Length: 192
Image 1 (spheres, rainbow, N blue to C red):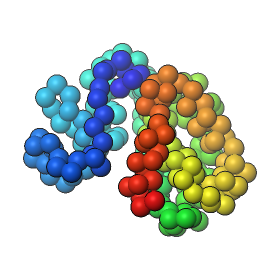
Image 2 (cartoon, rainbow, N blue to C red):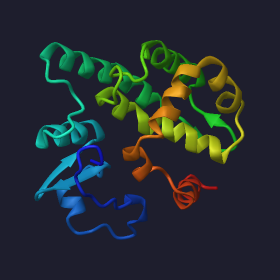
Image 3 (cartoon, one colour):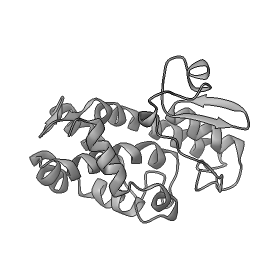
Image 4 (cartoon, rainbow, N blue to C red):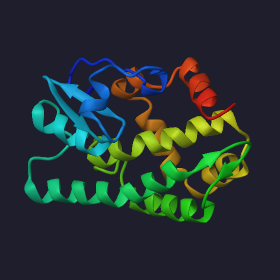
């Protein structure tokens, strides 16, 4: 939304002790994120991203050329499996989950990165789809000391880490980058 120049307000669903009355009827499955835009509700990260890109032609995250547009969507689809594995990875004092599968998916992401961004020389749909999940690993790394995150990732995924650091320099990312308070909230919701 920042890239599109769309003003927004983030309401953290974890802070809902009593969700707003619009939340459950418009979102019976309880999925987050939910976007309310011009009176309409849209659920799901990827769907929201593409909806906003279609709703505002300014600064599109997809190229105009149909073949390139399809390629970017295909790449975003390929990165969805990386996102799913990261979503299933939890932690207490170390990472918990299928770490071998996580390593395989991160290897795929590393191999797909052939230019500064997954979309070439500029941020695009695949970058925006993957970023929040790599950010999640980054936040976990701030919370725990884990050999995989601290040693294995920098050694085996240098392109992915460089991409993440490049992404964090963009004004759009800076506007929504996690604050110390959000990292604390993240730790609290995970039981720390």
